[in-house]
Image 1 (tube, each protein chain N blue to C red):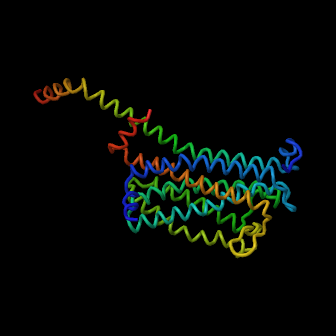
Image 2: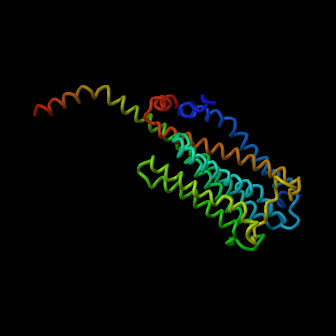
Length: 76
Length: 246
């Protein structure tokens, strides 16, 4: 290792604040770059699951009464 | 060859293959970057003129190099989309834009931080820096243009045209340090002739550049996977995929 001690590594003979902030910003941006599509994909799949559940739930018990409503609306 | 061409037109196949590529490429890219950055930060000597501030090179140069490469990907995908109307090219073009924008942003910010101790200023209207700022605006412009249209077919055509027109900026970025009297230092790594960087600094830098390319590919594929699912959300294979994942 080039630096003698950990504090020297942090200080980088006066350039520490520049070097470390540059690396920290890069790390933060790169992390966002990866988590953004992953989050989006998970959210989309969850939405689709919920939609499917609503659809399935609506189909079963709702078919009977819905048809009755329809015909009664037509009759009246 | 033709079978690959046909498969590229198949969203489920593309979704699956990109998923399996990501599974091994992602760890390699992250490991490469961690090793490269640690090597550059801890195990190289400081620059004889710039001292320790030069260590920013291990992220600044890879980000800038790949930001430019990302523009090629976006523009070529745009051209393919315009000429052959390939849907997947349009997905690739729009997936490249935010990744390219993020890398250009990293290059500009780290360059600015590097400039302060080296040139004494956070920002100068230097040819290289200004043309990189234009690159950022081109990426953001493509993203904004896509959002501005309700008709997505027209949106992607307009984006492809903008991306192609913007390629004018690429040779300007490359040549800016030679054409204008510039504060920005010229390239240290040369494909023709001897590089002006010591080999002890060159190897970690090359490792970081390769890792950034790999990271770009991962982010590109990640965005493409999301876009594919969004466009195909009404199809049975996506519905099945949603039902299977818990």
